[in-house]
Amino acid sequence: MGKVSGVFLLVGICLGAVMAMLLVPPSRSDTAVVAAPASGAAALTVESEAAEPPPSEPPPSVPPKSSPQPNPGKPVTGVDPKTLSGLVPDGQVSVVVFDRLAKKTTVSLQADRSYTSASLVKILIALEALKAGASPGTVQRMLSVSDDGIASELWTAHGGPAIVTRWATKIGLAGTRPPEDPGRWGDTRITAADIAKVYRYLLEQVGAGTRTTIMRGLSGATENGSDGIRQYFGVPDAVGDLPWSIKQGWACCRGARIMHSSGVVGEHDRHIVVVLTSQPTSTTYPGAGRRVTDVVKALVPALAAG
Image 1 (cartoon, rainbow, N blue to C red):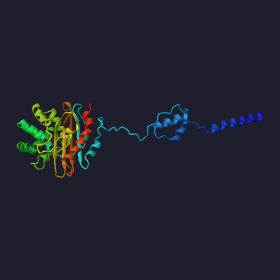
Image 2 (image 1 turned 120 degrees about the vertical axis):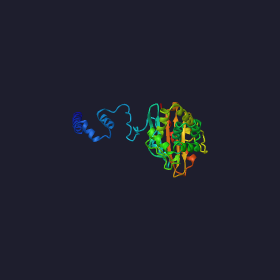
Image 3 (image 1 turned 90 degrees about the vertical axis):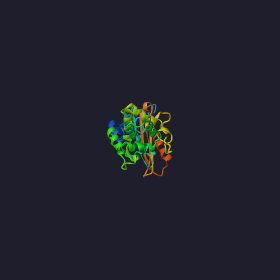
Image 4 (image 1 turned 45 degrees about the horizontal axis):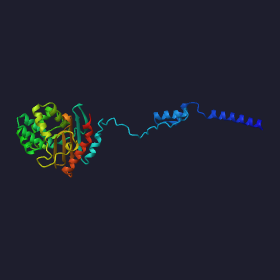
């Protein structure tokens, strides 16, 4: 019985060897074709498992294809311009943030879209009036309390629509136009890109006396305008303890409620911030102002950068 068992054992071993030769693939390339990996990382994993015995510990997991990938178009500040429009439902919003220290625009959304200026044109009126010798105190009051009566007097005295044309040419404001009705200075057409240029010109090119007068008016902005509208929406309500100087704009209701917040934020007036909005007339001034504040709050990472 022992010899018979030995014969059977020897036959079994031979048969096993033959079967193994028939079943083992002739090369690793056949394994790669059958496994058809979805990525280079997966291909390495498949080949490694076919060629080597299982490791004593499980390998690190490969991130799934659906894992979020960095957005190369997203600003390094963390502000995503594409999300800002959602903060002004049923309206339009344009945004520009310019870092004067880095000398670059850090946020831009619909920067060339056209809006009526409301009181933002008062900066151009101030530039023209001071050039013509107007009282600095009068100009500062026009700016700080957004006094429409003073603006109308200076507008009429110094050329009306020609003010806009002259300064648009001087500064290079491609999207700025005088109002169709010469008496309605608040209907001047502007863009966020142009208002940012106005601030750059004011801070970097005008004479020291003019700059000081205008900036004192903007930094001394009162909480309520001369018409009683609260003008601390947007930049003042959003930026916390950061220093600011502002010129706000609001108007209603020739087809839309206009709410603009613009100015400079940070030490040494580092960041120029412009937020222009056109909102439904069904909104209230406080409600529209809160939306502008929400937009500026979303910009705070850009204002705190550096």
